[in-house]
Length: 429
Ligand code: PMP
Image 1 (cartoon, rainbow, N blue to C red):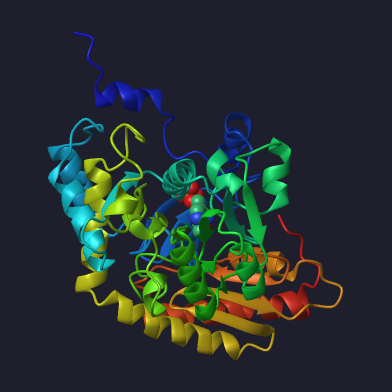
Image 2 (image 1 turned 30 degrees about the vertical axis):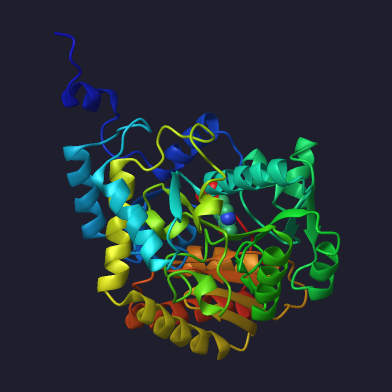
């Protein structure tokens, strides 16, 4: 017969692992170059460690940008995904499955959502925000309220709806007109918030409780509390984007739970939810909000498929049974204390294992954060990233060990010393 076997497939692959340089060349000629040159070709991971195609080992304090909540290749996630796929792989949105239902119930339970609340599963943070935006647009249609608010410095994704809510001009401007009616308020500015609600014309406001891409900048509790009061008072929807802060990253299941009196109408999740398996979610709080996206008003083929929901269910189970929320708070404090001792560090913003580090400017060195990131990776086997010229961001696995915290601190210290003392103008390649 014409059945393709694994031997046939293997014959189409080149023999042995190709060299990193060759892989990068093939990358350049076959992938759309939206992210520029990749930093390395990664071939294997385990816990907080990854290896590249040249055999170099790295301590990964970025964890796929806050995605690998349990580290790389966690045995539980690996066995759950392969077991689920072997049992039932994909079902489409015409059907449901036990893992999908159990995950929705578990999310509503840890979010302490009231009865009538519900979950929509997507495949990414952007898609979760697209669904949230559609709910707000429905609300806009039915109430006649015209304005949609977001904040300066926001990042909600790069699909067109999510991009409409993302502030950075460099991301938006090349694409001309986006979704109409979105306004950006200055960050943490209570007066501007009050003024925006003065005419009762707001359909919804999108907030990241902590802006990750902007450098780990937290909204004041008082700002979130006031946003909740104003939205409730004027019939606007409060949307919290917890794509980066959710699922234990800050030492709570969700960041809003650290702020008393603040429960959103809509919350978006992705990143760490599936421990590296692509899944996003929109949680609608209460019956009325859940009804905004009714039958036929939204959809996705892949969203909530069995392996993805099984991976997420296992992630929530591991966070809970491993006591990871408390662990994250302890490890985050330990890491921050070490960071604050480094003379090159000006300020540390630490919320669990969601950490931004401002560096002192280095005389004559442009964008020191990017140089430190490159030095740390190339010379000291440490993966972190930069969110601005002088800000580093750390988002390690939630199960990072104390020994790994110490190791990361000593590698970062070496990179910082190397940068300021020995290689003030290190090339960034
Ligand atoms: N919201 C926030 C707060 C994010 O940090 C990101 C990703 N950095 C997104 C949305 C978009 O998520 P995704 O890349 O999965 O589409």
